[in-house]
Amino acid sequence: MASKTPSEKTRMRRQARKHPAGERDDRNVSADVTAARLAEQKAGTETLARSIPFNATKAREYGRTNALNPAEGQPKPPPAYEVTASTITESATGDKTGAAAAQGENPNQAPLQRVRVDSSARELTTNQGVAISDNQSSLKSGLRGPTLLEDFILREKITHFDHERIPERVVHARGSAAHGYFECYEPLRDLTMAAPFAEAGKRTPVFVRFSTVAGERGSFDLARDVRGFAVKFYTEQGNWDLVGNNMPVFFIQDAMKFPDLVHAVKPEPHHAMPQAASAHDTFWDFASLMPEITHMLMWVMSDRAIPRSYRMMQGFGVHTFRLVNADGDSVFVKFHWNPKLGTHSVVWDEAVKINGADPDFHRRDLWEAIEAGSYPEWELALQIFTEEQADAFTFDVLDPTKIVPEELVPLRPVGRMVLDRNPIISSPRPNRLLSARSMSCQGSTSATIRCCRGAIFRTTTLN
Image 1 (cartoon, rainbow, N blue to C red):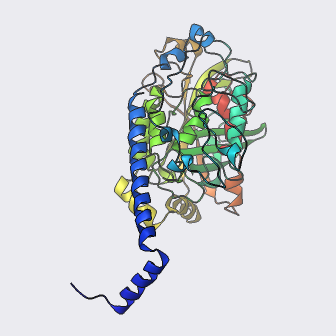
Image 2: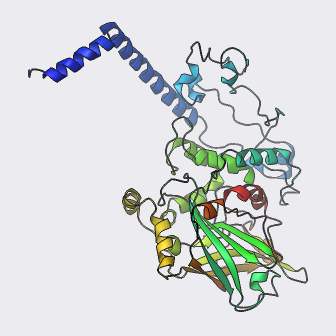
Image 3: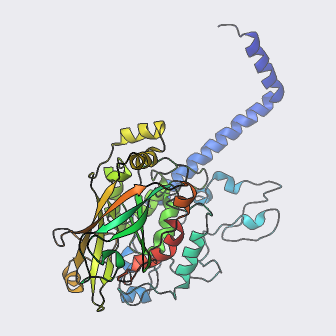
């Protein structure tokens, strides 16, 4: 056996003085116990997940009868106490932290005892302690009517969610933006009173912000993620915000579930990982219980989630909107932004390398293209259809998890958007810009869009 060097012997003697043999043995025992508890927690979590392979009450979310008599949930007792805890330290005891909370109780006494809560056997309540049976469905006017402001549970949930992180946005925190204009091809007065479509050749100033969704403000650009595509029109009738994404559908059908969706996709609460990624248990737990998410997952797991450039990315209004003309006649409309450079993506290996070499890749690409005079351009196309046509479709046009096939309703190009000027001060303006679906000009409305109604509250501070 090779002899140890003097420096190694000195280091071993110092370590022995710091940690005597008995203490080192105790540390090894403690490590073994911790490893065993972690293994037990993991096994118990997997057992609990397997016991609920799907959301059995999903079908009971629809229809008048079910609305009046909501189904009971699927309570499943955890196989062990620590299975429902974020970490195994939830059951740790000490002079400062006190003892673990009794099951289903919050004694609110002793050192820090007031924050040690086990809610596994308690009823669901609002923040004010009002017992409720459901916080996943908003109150609507009729089976397919708009969401009602009388829904105090929805308002409380969205308000609480909107104020969780200030000043950074909860979602869409990382973004890039530019100034430009929208130019109308032809007057659309037969369809809408909206000022941008009043006459051929009319130019309306715009400010556009592109963004990732899940990552924080300092995250990297080429995350596998949805991209925000928010266009603010500065019209003589007031500002009109056309807030959308680079994918034509969305994860959920009811805005009541939006806070839960974002909480699920955000980093795990106990170790704050992973950043700007959905590859973790909480997101896929949520996805497994929400069948309507399937269509969106096909988009998010495709190359559309890692675009080559903001300049080569489509934009969609996602929801079905209304256009209203001067006579009060209305039609349904879906908005599409198509890049003149075409739609291009990178592959995952390229995205990983680019993120390592230049986390600001998309931001730099947009800035440098505009500075060089290579102005990005998109064509705005509309899908226009009547209520009678919508009633004849085999799907619900108010469902944001569905598209309206172009075979049924072809695209009609109505104008182009050009971005030709970078912000003077990059950081404050794009990141403080507020875009909201509630900001609309005459001739455009989201009046009947249920999921969009809830989004009106959240996008005021998010996009």
